[in-house]
Image 1 (cartoon, rainbow, N blue to C red):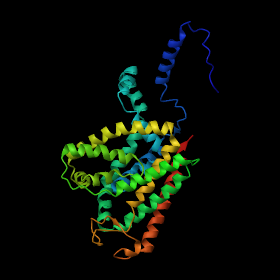
Image 2: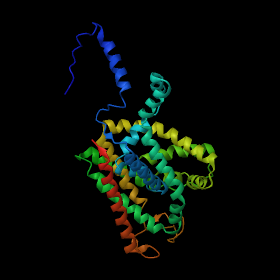
Image 3: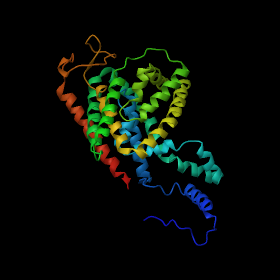
Image 4: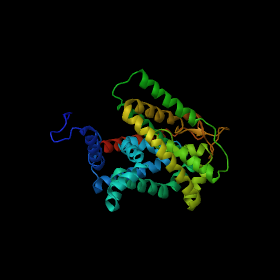
Length: 346
C-alpha cells in the first residue's frame, strides 16, 4: 500500500527539506533492516554453513581454467547477494561509521557490507584453494578427460537450468544471449601468453581475472592462463609466496570494487536482459570445457587445448567414463540449484 504524500499535521510549513532529511537519516539507520524487494536471508549457523560449502564449490570451480566461480554462485542462489555485498564497499562506509561511532559504527559497517556472509564465503573459497588446488592440478595434468567431462556436464546443466529463469524471450534478449556466447567463444580461443610476469603485471592480471571470476561463464583462472600468470599464481599458493599472493589479491580487490558496481546497476535495472547475457557467457564457455582435447600435433600432453571429436581422441572416446562423469556433474549442479532456491525465503 502506497504511503500518503500529504505532510504530517505537526510538520512545519517548510517541512519538505526537513522531512526529506529525516527520512534519509531514518533510511540510513534502518538500511540493514528494510530493503526494498531484497530477499530476507536466514543467517543462522545452518545457513552460514551452507554459504561456506557454496564457497568451497566456488573455489573448486575457479581453480579450473574454464569454469567460473560466478557460475556456481548464480546457480546456488547467492549471486545477487554477493554482488550487492561487494558493491556496497566504498567511501560511504566511513560516513556510516561516523554516524554511530565506536563499536556501534563498526557493527553498522559490518551489516552494510553483509560481512558475515562475505566472510563465510571467502573462508569456503580459501579452504578450497588450499585443499583442492593440488588435487585439481594433478587431475588436469594426468586425468584431463575425467575432470573436463565432469565440468562439461556441470556447465551444460547450468545453461538449461538458467534458461528457465528467463520469463519472456524477445529479440533483444536473444541477441544478448548470442553476444555473450560469442564473446566467451572468442575469449576461449585466444592464444596463450608466455611472458614472465612482474609484480605490476600480476596486479593488473589479478584485476582483470577477478572481473571474469565474478562474471558467470568466463573463468578468472583462464584469464590468468591467457595472460601467462596462471602457473605463477598457482605456484605462489603452493609455496606461500606472500609477495605474489598479496599483489594478486590487491589487484583483485581493485577490479572487484569497480566491476561489481556496474554489474549491480545492470541487475537492478535490466535483470532479465543481463541474465540472458550471463547465460550466453556460460554457454560459450562450453568450448573451453570440451573434454576431448589434443595439442597441435594431435597428441596428449599438458598443452592439449585443441578440441577434437570424441572418436578422434588418441586413447578413444571412453564413453562410459565421460558420459557418467557428465551425468554426475549435471546431477550435482541440479542439486545445488535446488538447495540454493530453498535457502532463500522471499
